[in-house]
Length: 143
Image (tube, rainbow, N blue to C red):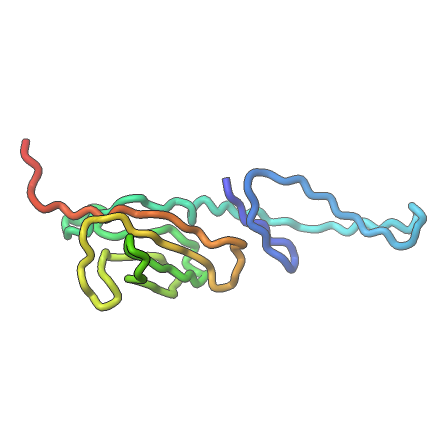
């Protein structure tokens, strides 16, 4: 599980669970040790990790869009590349959604596309990368 930890001034993306202990020592004597309470808020980032691996933009109102759940507040950079590495779509928005068209509006064909997702505020240490299969039905399935 990936989690985002926000401390007072810093944010960290971590895998699994961590145990944190902070102490500030002033001088060399134990009597001079000061403990400062630190509130750590753990935010579950699994919602961002809920990324589909296939969609079918064929106007049947079922999986017509590639949609990634976000918090709706942060700005995300989202890019889609063809199998040859050509950038075909990009957005900068609080939502991550792709309708299977290029930036010029051209419908893309069946295939596997590479995507990258990162946050504008750089809270994530690494961008999320992956593949999505765009599948267009060309004929009705036969019973």
